[in-house]
Amino acid sequence: MKTLALIARPKKPEAAELAAAIAAAHPELELLVEPHLAEQTGWAATPADEIRERAELVVVLGGDGTLIHAARLLRGRPVPLLGVNLGSLGFMTEIPAVGALPALASVLAGTARIDSRMKLACRLVRGGRVVLEDEVLNDIVITKAALAKIADHETWLDGAYVATFKSDGVIFATPTGSTAYSLSAGGPIVHPSIDCAVVTPICPHALTQRPIVVPADVPLTLKMTAEVSDVYLTIDGQEGQPLKLGDQLEIWKSEHRVQLVRNPQLDYFAILRTKLRWGER
Image 1 (spheres, helix red, strand yellow):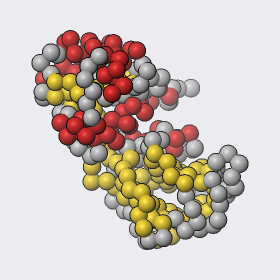
Image 2 (cartoon, rainbow, N blue to C red):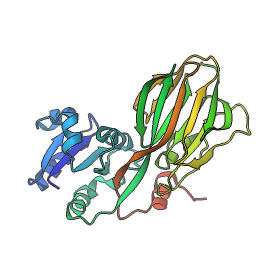
Image 3 (cartoon, rainbow, N blue to C red):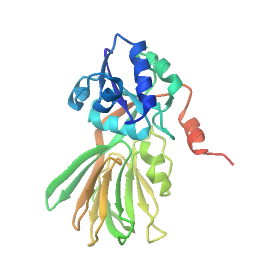
Protein backbone atom coordinates (compact mmCIF):
# COMPACT_ATOMS: atom_id res chain seq x y z
CA MET A 1 0.00 0.00 0.00
CA LYS A 2 1.31 3.41 -0.98
CA THR A 3 -1.75 5.66 -0.75
CA LEU A 4 -3.51 6.26 2.56
CA ALA A 5 -6.69 8.28 3.06
CA LEU A 6 -7.30 9.98 6.40
CA ILE A 7 -10.97 10.57 7.21
CA ALA A 8 -11.36 12.55 10.43
CA ARG A 9 -14.21 13.82 12.55
CA PRO A 10 -14.48 17.59 11.94
CA LYS A 11 -13.36 19.99 14.67
CA LYS A 12 -11.63 17.23 16.61
CA PRO A 13 -8.13 18.41 17.66
CA GLU A 14 -7.13 14.85 18.64
CA ALA A 15 -7.81 13.73 15.07
CA ALA A 16 -5.44 16.34 13.62
CA GLU A 17 -2.75 15.41 16.17
CA LEU A 18 -3.04 11.72 15.37
CA ALA A 19 -3.01 12.43 11.63
CA ALA A 20 0.27 14.32 12.10
CA ALA A 21 1.71 11.39 14.07
CA ILE A 22 0.74 8.97 11.28
CA ALA A 23 2.35 11.22 8.67
CA ALA A 24 5.56 11.45 10.72
CA ALA A 25 5.70 7.67 11.25
CA HIS A 26 5.11 6.83 7.59
CA PRO A 27 6.74 9.41 5.30
CA GLU A 28 6.75 6.81 2.53
CA LEU A 29 2.95 6.99 2.24
CA GLU A 30 1.01 9.46 0.12
CA LEU A 31 -1.74 10.96 2.25
CA LEU A 32 -5.17 11.92 0.93
CA VAL A 33 -7.19 14.17 3.26
CA GLU A 34 -10.57 15.86 3.23
CA PRO A 35 -10.74 19.71 3.26
CA HIS A 36 -11.59 20.12 6.95
CA LEU A 37 -8.59 18.01 8.03
CA ALA A 38 -6.39 19.82 5.51
CA GLU A 39 -7.31 23.12 7.16
CA GLN A 40 -6.26 21.81 10.57
CA THR A 41 -2.97 20.29 9.39
CA GLY A 42 -1.94 22.71 6.65
CA TRP A 43 -1.82 19.92 4.06
CA ALA A 44 -3.30 20.03 0.57
CA ALA A 45 -6.94 18.93 0.41
CA THR A 46 -7.97 15.97 -1.74
CA PRO A 47 -11.31 15.92 -3.63
CA ALA A 48 -13.74 13.18 -2.59
CA ASP A 49 -13.66 11.57 -6.04
CA GLU A 50 -9.86 11.23 -5.88
CA ILE A 51 -10.01 9.69 -2.41
CA ARG A 52 -12.61 7.22 -3.67
CA GLU A 53 -10.56 6.26 -6.73
CA ARG A 54 -7.03 6.18 -5.31
CA ALA A 55 -7.13 5.22 -1.64
CA GLU A 56 -5.69 1.77 -0.85
CA LEU A 57 -6.41 2.04 2.88
CA VAL A 58 -8.64 4.42 4.83
CA VAL A 59 -7.82 5.36 8.42
CA VAL A 60 -10.86 6.75 10.20
CA LEU A 61 -10.16 9.13 13.09
CA GLY A 62 -13.39 9.62 15.00
CA GLY A 63 -16.39 7.51 15.91
CA ASP A 64 -18.85 5.19 14.19
CA GLY A 65 -20.52 8.11 12.41
CA THR A 66 -17.19 9.07 10.86
CA LEU A 67 -16.63 5.48 9.78
CA ILE A 68 -20.07 5.35 8.15
CA HIS A 69 -19.19 8.57 6.32
CA ALA A 70 -15.96 6.95 5.08
CA ALA A 71 -17.81 3.83 3.90
CA ARG A 72 -20.29 5.98 2.01
CA LEU A 73 -17.49 7.99 0.45
CA LEU A 74 -15.95 4.79 -0.98
CA ARG A 75 -19.27 3.81 -2.65
CA GLY A 76 -18.58 0.10 -2.62
CA ARG A 77 -14.85 0.01 -3.34
CA PRO A 78 -13.38 -2.88 -1.27
CA VAL A 79 -10.83 -0.73 0.56
CA PRO A 80 -9.99 -1.66 4.19
CA LEU A 81 -11.21 0.77 6.84
CA LEU A 82 -9.11 1.10 10.00
CA GLY A 83 -11.34 2.76 12.58
CA VAL A 84 -9.60 4.63 15.42
CA ASN A 85 -12.05 5.49 18.16
CA LEU A 86 -12.00 9.16 19.15
CA GLY A 87 -15.71 9.16 19.98
CA SER A 88 -17.75 7.89 22.90
CA LEU A 89 -19.00 4.40 21.93
CA GLY A 90 -17.13 2.98 18.99
CA PHE A 91 -18.67 -0.34 17.93
CA MET A 92 -16.99 -0.25 14.53
CA THR A 93 -14.07 2.04 15.37
CA GLU A 94 -12.44 -0.66 17.49
CA ILE A 95 -8.86 0.61 17.69
CA PRO A 96 -8.02 2.95 20.60
CA ALA A 97 -5.93 6.02 19.84
CA VAL A 98 -2.85 4.53 21.54
CA GLY A 99 -3.11 1.50 19.26
CA ALA A 100 -3.47 3.41 15.99
CA LEU A 101 0.17 3.24 14.86
CA PRO A 102 0.66 -0.48 15.73
CA ALA A 103 -2.64 -1.33 13.99
CA LEU A 104 -1.59 0.63 10.90
CA ALA A 105 1.77 -1.15 10.89
CA SER A 106 0.03 -4.54 10.97
CA VAL A 107 -2.16 -3.58 8.01
CA LEU A 108 0.85 -2.39 6.01
CA ALA A 109 2.67 -5.62 6.88
CA GLY A 110 -0.30 -7.72 5.74
CA THR A 111 -0.87 -9.33 9.14
CA ALA A 112 -4.08 -7.55 10.22
CA ARG A 113 -7.39 -9.36 10.51
CA ILE A 114 -10.09 -7.86 8.31
CA ASP A 115 -13.82 -8.56 8.58
CA SER A 116 -16.18 -8.31 5.62
CA ARG A 117 -19.53 -6.73 6.54
CA MET A 118 -22.66 -6.85 4.41
CA LYS A 119 -24.54 -3.78 3.27
CA LEU A 120 -28.16 -3.21 2.32
CA ALA A 121 -29.17 -1.38 -0.84
CA CYS A 122 -32.42 0.52 -1.19
CA ARG A 123 -34.48 2.32 -3.79
CA LEU A 124 -37.35 4.77 -3.20
CA VAL A 125 -39.97 4.67 -5.96
CA ARG A 126 -42.60 7.40 -6.28
CA GLY A 127 -45.17 7.32 -9.06
CA GLY A 128 -43.10 4.79 -10.99
CA ARG A 129 -39.97 6.96 -10.81
CA VAL A 130 -36.85 6.28 -8.73
CA VAL A 131 -36.25 9.33 -6.54
CA LEU A 132 -33.46 7.89 -4.36
CA GLU A 133 -31.07 4.93 -4.54
CA ASP A 134 -28.39 4.25 -1.95
CA GLU A 135 -26.56 1.70 0.22
CA VAL A 136 -26.14 1.44 3.99
CA LEU A 137 -23.76 -0.20 6.43
CA ASN A 138 -26.01 0.34 9.47
CA ASP A 139 -29.67 0.95 8.76
CA ILE A 140 -32.51 2.35 6.70
CA VAL A 141 -35.00 4.14 8.94
CA ILE A 142 -38.53 5.35 8.34
CA THR A 143 -39.80 7.50 11.17
CA LYS A 144 -42.24 10.28 11.92
CA ALA A 145 -41.69 13.73 13.35
CA ALA A 146 -42.49 14.38 17.02
CA LEU A 147 -46.11 15.51 16.56
CA ALA A 148 -47.03 13.43 13.52
CA LYS A 149 -49.59 10.61 13.70
CA ILE A 150 -48.53 6.96 13.49
CA ALA A 151 -48.32 5.69 9.93
CA ASP A 152 -49.22 2.48 8.08
CA HIS A 153 -46.11 0.68 6.81
CA GLU A 154 -47.19 -2.22 4.58
CA THR A 155 -44.28 -4.65 4.47
CA TRP A 156 -43.59 -7.47 1.98
CA LEU A 157 -40.88 -10.13 1.79
CA ASP A 158 -40.10 -11.64 -1.62
CA GLY A 159 -43.60 -10.74 -2.82
CA ALA A 160 -45.34 -12.25 0.24
CA TYR A 161 -47.26 -9.97 2.58
CA VAL A 162 -45.68 -9.77 6.06
CA ALA A 163 -47.66 -7.18 8.02
CA THR A 164 -48.82 -3.60 8.08
CA PHE A 165 -46.90 -2.00 10.90
CA LYS A 166 -49.00 0.73 12.51
CA SER A 167 -46.10 2.41 14.24
CA ASP A 168 -43.90 5.45 14.62
CA GLY A 169 -41.68 3.93 11.97
CA VAL A 170 -39.70 0.89 10.82
CA ILE A 171 -35.97 0.16 10.93
CA PHE A 172 -34.28 -2.10 8.37
CA ALA A 173 -30.86 -2.94 9.85
CA THR A 174 -27.84 -4.93 8.79
CA PRO A 175 -26.16 -7.19 11.36
CA THR A 176 -23.63 -4.41 11.89
CA GLY A 177 -26.49 -1.99 12.51
CA SER A 178 -28.34 -4.37 14.83
CA THR A 179 -26.55 -2.80 17.83
CA ALA A 180 -27.53 0.74 16.80
CA TYR A 181 -31.05 2.25 16.55
CA SER A 182 -32.66 -1.16 16.05
CA LEU A 183 -31.38 -2.37 19.43
CA SER A 184 -32.74 0.75 21.13
CA ALA A 185 -36.13 -0.01 19.55
CA GLY A 186 -36.16 -3.57 20.91
CA GLY A 187 -34.48 -5.41 18.05
CA PRO A 188 -32.10 -8.36 18.52
CA ILE A 189 -28.31 -8.36 18.54
CA VAL A 190 -27.12 -10.18 15.41
CA HIS A 191 -23.53 -11.35 14.98
CA PRO A 192 -21.97 -9.43 12.06
CA SER A 193 -20.73 -12.61 10.37
CA ILE A 194 -24.36 -13.56 9.57
CA ASP A 195 -25.85 -12.14 6.38
CA CYS A 196 -29.43 -11.14 7.16
CA ALA A 197 -31.70 -8.13 7.65
CA VAL A 198 -33.47 -7.09 10.84
CA VAL A 199 -36.93 -5.50 10.52
CA THR A 200 -37.81 -3.59 13.69
CA PRO A 201 -41.05 -1.59 14.08
CA ILE A 202 -40.66 1.56 16.18
CA CYS A 203 -43.26 1.76 18.98
CA PRO A 204 -45.88 -0.39 17.16
CA HIS A 205 -49.53 0.17 18.05
CA ALA A 206 -50.06 -3.62 18.32
CA LEU A 207 -47.94 -5.49 20.87
CA THR A 208 -48.07 -8.56 18.60
CA GLN A 209 -45.88 -6.82 16.00
CA ARG A 210 -42.34 -7.72 16.99
CA PRO A 211 -38.94 -7.45 15.27
CA ILE A 212 -38.09 -10.16 12.75
CA VAL A 213 -34.87 -11.42 11.15
CA VAL A 214 -35.06 -12.32 7.46
CA PRO A 215 -32.61 -13.76 4.91
CA ALA A 216 -30.35 -11.16 3.32
CA ASP A 217 -30.82 -12.48 -0.20
CA VAL A 218 -34.62 -12.05 -0.18
CA PRO A 219 -35.89 -8.59 -1.22
CA LEU A 220 -38.06 -6.48 1.10
CA THR A 221 -40.65 -3.92 0.09
CA LEU A 222 -42.36 -1.29 2.21
CA LYS A 223 -45.34 0.73 1.01
CA MET A 224 -46.80 3.86 2.57
CA THR A 225 -50.51 3.02 2.41
CA ALA A 226 -52.14 5.83 4.39
CA GLU A 227 -52.00 9.61 4.16
CA VAL A 228 -49.69 11.02 6.80
CA SER A 229 -47.43 14.04 7.07
CA ASP A 230 -43.93 14.46 8.46
CA VAL A 231 -42.64 10.94 7.75
CA TYR A 232 -39.01 10.65 6.70
CA LEU A 233 -36.61 8.13 5.23
CA THR A 234 -33.08 8.31 6.68
CA ILE A 235 -30.10 6.51 5.17
CA ASP A 236 -27.40 5.54 7.69
CA GLY A 237 -28.20 8.70 9.64
CA GLN A 238 -26.54 10.71 6.84
CA GLU A 239 -29.15 11.39 4.16
CA GLY A 240 -32.87 12.17 4.48
CA GLN A 241 -35.95 12.21 2.27
CA PRO A 242 -39.60 13.06 3.14
CA LEU A 243 -42.09 10.31 2.28
CA LYS A 244 -45.55 10.56 0.73
CA LEU A 245 -48.64 8.39 0.38
CA GLY A 246 -48.00 5.66 -2.22
CA ASP A 247 -44.21 5.71 -1.90
CA GLN A 248 -42.57 2.30 -2.22
CA LEU A 249 -39.23 1.45 -0.63
CA GLU A 250 -37.36 -1.54 -2.06
CA ILE A 251 -34.54 -3.11 -0.03
CA TRP A 252 -32.11 -5.90 -0.94
CA LYS A 253 -28.64 -7.18 -0.12
CA SER A 254 -25.97 -5.03 -1.75
CA GLU A 255 -23.33 -6.63 -3.95
CA HIS A 256 -20.78 -4.46 -2.13
CA ARG A 257 -19.29 -5.12 1.30
CA VAL A 258 -17.31 -3.07 3.81
CA GLN A 259 -13.89 -4.25 4.92
CA LEU A 260 -13.16 -3.44 8.59
CA VAL A 261 -9.79 -3.87 10.25
CA ARG A 262 -10.30 -5.67 13.57
CA ASN A 263 -8.73 -4.99 16.93
CA PRO A 264 -6.71 -8.16 17.71
CA GLN A 265 -7.32 -7.60 21.43
CA LEU A 266 -11.12 -7.76 21.17
CA ASP A 267 -13.62 -10.29 19.87
CA TYR A 268 -17.24 -9.36 19.12
CA PHE A 269 -18.59 -10.38 22.51
CA ALA A 270 -15.80 -8.52 24.28
CA ILE A 271 -16.97 -5.42 22.41
CA LEU A 272 -20.54 -6.04 23.59
CA ARG A 273 -19.39 -6.43 27.18
CA THR A 274 -17.20 -3.35 26.99
CA LYS A 275 -19.61 -1.05 25.19
CA LEU A 276 -23.02 -2.31 26.40
CA ARG A 277 -22.20 -4.17 29.61
CA TRP A 278 -23.84 -7.07 27.78
CA GLY A 279 -24.23 -10.27 29.79
CA GLU A 280 -23.58 -8.61 33.15
CA ARG A 281 -25.87 -9.05 36.15
